[in-house]
Length: 83
Image 1: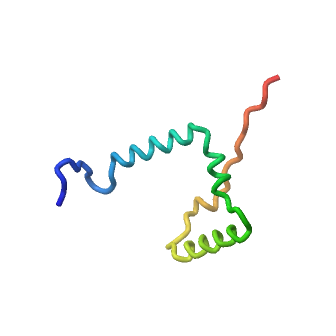
Image 2: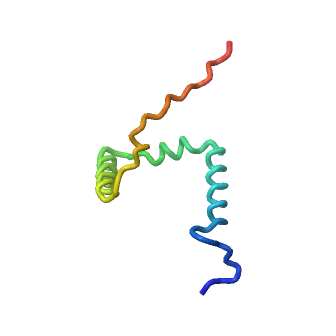
Image 3: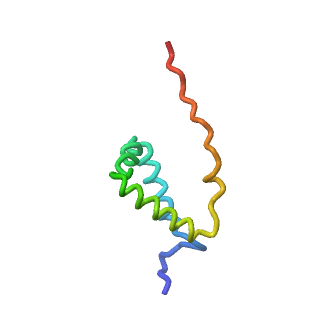
């Protein structure tokens, strides 16, 4: 049964998507991304191997790999310090 206040049409929950986007933008602006990435890194060679095995299993189940994953990212150019 559909609730009267459910204004979602088609696929997805638009309100939840907007809230997620806002929270994600706030997280990026907070400057905590690098720390979170370091905290998420494997803590041991065994953990790194386990993650690699899990990724390989997931790739085997996937229909195809996203070609964008194989494209080299353009190098990041940092501004030169002014003298």
